Structures are given as C-alpha cells and as structure tokens.
Image (tube, rainbow, N blue to C red; front, side, top):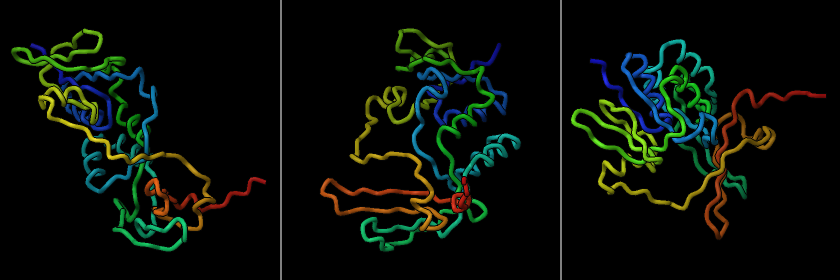
Length: 232
C-alpha cells in the first residue's frame, strides 16, 4: 500500500523548510497554498538569522542548496546593534552583538528565503487552495477548502499558514487568539548616503518626541554599501 502523504497547509518559510526535509528523506507530502503563485504578493521585511537558525537550515538543506542559500544572505560586520536619538544624534545605548557566523550579522529577505526553500517542491504544491479547516478520517486526515472541496487523504496534517491559521484555530477549539499590539512597520531601502556616516553595522534611530508615539528606524549598513561609486 502506498504511503499517504503528509499534508501541509500554507507555503510559508517554516512550512517550506519542513517540506525540504521531507523531500530529502523521500517522505511523500503535498502543500496547499491560498496564493496563486510564489510571487503573488510581497513577503514583508528582512530577517536576521541567529546561529541556531542557520544551524537548523543547514541541517535540512543539501550541501549545494545550503551554499546557494548562504551566498544569497547579506553579511554585516560592525559592533553589534547600536541605538541613537534621531533628533539629537546622541548615542543612547549599545546592545548585544548580533553576529551569527564568522563575526558577521547574517540576514536575508523573506522573499528570497521563500524562493530558495521552495526549490525542488514545485511538483508537490497546489496553488489557489484556501484551507479553511480539516476533518479526521479513520486513519488519516483531509483538508477542507474555501470552495467546499477536499484534499486527498493524508497520514498527518501540518499547519503552516501563520498566525491566522484556520487549522490552528480548529485544533485549539477556538482558544488560539491573535492580538494587535498597535505597532506598525514599513520595510524599504534608502540610499547609502543616508546612513553612511554611521559606518558598518546595524543601527536603531529613535524619535520619542512625537505625541502619536515612538517612531524608530532600523537600518543595516554592510561593507559593500560603504564603497563610493563614481558614475560620471
């Protein structure tokens, strides 16, 4: 009898890395993702990777895939995470070092990470499949979709849809709650000249003078950003 696949709802970072571990172990799986494609929507901010995180990723990916992933990551030196008053320019505090490997802070955009983790999983994913819940069978589980259809039967289900997971809410009996802290973040890129004076490193500039609340900018200045290029 053929082994039933492991069903994965959602194609986020953790879900895709888990899928890569199954792929490497030759364990059948299926991924169901509500988006129409990998690039259907923006993936948000850049992530700093801890030593433990890098070790975990390296343990899952095959050596060539790991080398490709690590080459894509940004690597920042400097003196750790420092903070300044954005209004006065005064140095306020220094945080712990953020180095992950080789004395460098390692980071990568979520979109790049997701694309790299997805490699090799293309034939095992179904797009436009909005997971709304699941039903248990006598010896497995099926996913229930927003259009009323069901997935193939699987041996087990892994919920990977993030904080608004319908699978997690059903499994917890509605006890899982999500709270809005009121904090908002905007991710983008600025010309190097805006932060070159800080030198290489990771910095936070904070403005506490606003009645509406604190405003902070976190920037990552890498060694390559410090080089001036003459375009004349």
